[in-house]
Length: 513
Ligand code: HEM
Image (tube, rainbow, N blue to C red):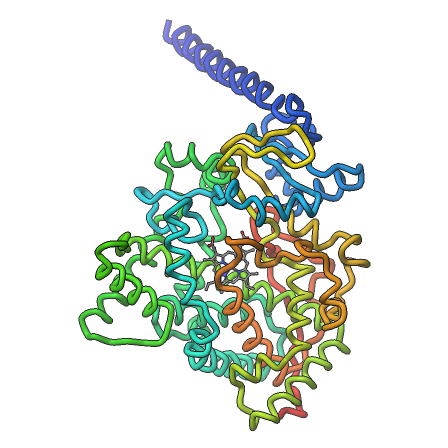
């Protein structure tokens, strides 16, 4: 009798699961007609991943797959392509004019990124990168003066100190005559810089085997288990994730950052202490908003914390990735490396050997090398936009519906031989004074474009230049037999990231100046 009951229950559960599966399958099949009925060329979807490869079999990252969609459909002469992420349709423009319209000319139709944020259940997610509409416009206007060259100069002493710590740590590591995990060094350096500027805390990540900032910063970017699924839902259907009251910031990450930001704000407010950094600028904005009774939209502690957090996550990973790929390419191209080193020598001699803001601005060739690194390895491999107002695609009868997610495939565009001949070649001369003017507008987008362009662009370049100046002035980099070439990219990362460590030899530069 007992056996029959268990058997019946199992059968019922099986029948229920089968019904759910058939329900899902039928729903997905229905969704998969979306692009066909609208006459948009599309990648044939399969259940359940849509146009994407099964992430469990370790295919390619989302950004790399978007590059492949771009390349394949451009080769067929298409101006755009529709894909499905699970059941959710996503629009990918290919034609450069179309891209320009979306991110600049017709920006009012695409003001939002459409990425997940949830002010109530996940306060750290409600930052400038994610928030939408009027709230974004208001905050963007308030934050723009925070990133002027004057403010960058003001923060420069913090960067000098972080550069000193980087050199000290490299001296110790190279003294052991062992290869350097350059990805780890770059991450520690930029974490020191951004951590110090965004949270107002002086700390030295090089002194601890695993600093909490590195630990929780990495933790934020490397989702585990069920978090991966939550991230995919948050990416494909942010409104659903919000309705389900999801929190995509891991709890321990939220607790850690909320605590240190609270301590930093309290300390300054109670002790009347001021420091020249982003945190101070955020506190000043908060106070001026409080006083501005007529136009003030208020900046709660949670909102302030979310902005400090985004400066950290948007600023440390992007610049450390840039430094890492740059050093890797320089190790592979010793002549280019030497040319940068000679420029550093020549410029710093004019400034009595002192690194300063104006000296960095004079390092034009280093600027070209960074530009080329950002072309070949854009830290964000794609831009997101969401259609907020129905949009007829120029020259067609196709109308993008409100809420349609749009992806601009930066990696595909920047490795397109039509815009950058021989795209796999690392060639900083593409960005010299003569060639720079020949670059087709909107074919080079490492910082995005239009009103939602990266607000931290200047700061990102500045900290990358400081790191490279310190390293290339004092060391020569070359491949080690632990350097894994060709690079294997992390298939689970939404940003440009190598799977595992990157080892290089760093030899002291004996012609040190
Ligand atoms: C090499 C360094 C960096 C790269 C390559 C980079 C790249 C980008 C890109 C591609 C976007 C999206 C732009 C768009 O959608 O059109 C973006 C947005 C943003 N970035 Fe950066 N970034 C860098 C450094 C920084 C730094 C240092 C900060 C802050 C200190 C920062 C803060 C932001 C913020 C807040 C946004 C959102 C802007 C908005 O929506 O109004 N970034 N970044």
